[in-house]
Length: 233
Image (tube, rainbow, N blue to C red; front, side, top):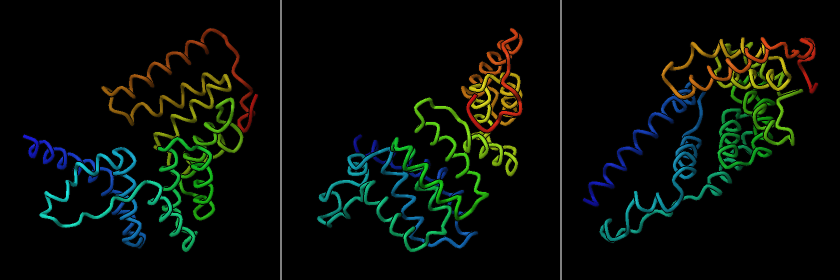
């Protein structure tokens, strides 16, 4: 039973990684990325959610390998160090910077994530993932958690490049709601609705936020001046 459990767990892990990594790998190949970066992607994708203990049980013990010395698992810190070493040699690799930013975001290090996304935009000013990631990370660093100033502008710029960016639409609606621009927030979230599975929890949450925004707008609560879209009220 134990063997069957690990076999099923391994299959589930492979499927999850395939769904996560295949699109990224394909995109990387189209841009001529090296195999080294793909290895780091796999390491980070596995190590962040599972940790070294989970990897130990999935890989097995030395006895199950017939006495063969198992390879030492790479820690998240080591994976990040290797990624940073690669970026030192290739500072113009925007996708690698985005990967680093997402990793820091998963590790709840928004300041480091924001810095990584900033480097990504220097390498590729129109990188939508970096633009959206920077805006979100900046809001987590700020004491008031507002999306304002450069973050607001980046979300608008991201949507100008990729109008169907779900994350950008969601965050822009939040930013408008924070500015008491309830009519604008509801309109932005309505653009998001057709992009979502109508039966998903996310779609239900968006519908609830639209209702709240429209209720506040209908109650006569003043929207902020429409021209003030770049900073705090």
